[in-house]
Image (cartoon, rainbow, N blue to C red):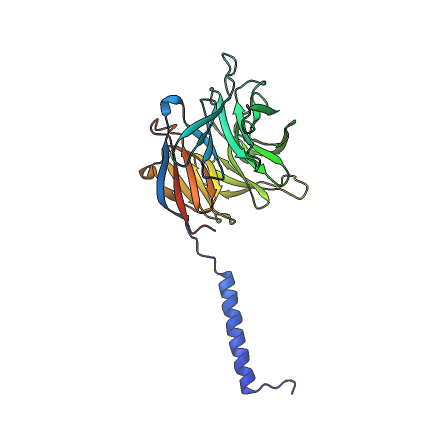
Length: 325
């Protein structure tokens, strides 16, 4: 009858209320923060510092080889799984007396690979005739496909495979540029104080992840997220992590927002959790010598070290990711 309840009904109601309360408490309790652990660290290649083999950035080949840019020798190279180095291209030297913003010397930065095996990479010389986005097709010669300003320092590079666009992080001008993979005139996609340097280098590494461009700022020690709307327009800058001074490049460990960051001057790789907290997971004891960049494939992370600060043993190492999202 309406308004009455049997003993069994009362019992069922009590259980239902208890379950609902437990669910509410569980929902309100923050998830436990976990740190990505790395194991099975192995140095794939010890590189030749006297030949300028200081890897700045990295992209992976399907068979396990790594394509890298050697920052100051103007070379793009492939490092095989057994550590052999093969130079794929050498970029033209700038005119005598030319000086790159901030770094002075000609600088090769970010590199990405498309499914047709074409490599795209960034070159800065301090001159308008060479600075910009370059392309290297298999068996071909390097060709500039987009010019960037002479006073820019293109550093990080990311590829949007869906739209066929390249995103460039400019460390000198605090700007994110966007360029079609077919080439053309770059557009300023995003500018903000959070991207600018405070004395040395600003926007550095860049990755496209879950509908947004994620960017590191070396001087500010931050990881930023910039949403990309349905029209490809940049949204407001969100700061997702702080306290990562000298952060260089980074890579996500999986589909979630956990990432691994190269902390260059400190010889560290740090695991940064979605809430912005972070923990060191690799150090010089593991073989790091000024890590500059990372790439992840499956449960393996590749870490390139350029030894900018140590001047000893630039290398490429791999490690197994435990607990990737």
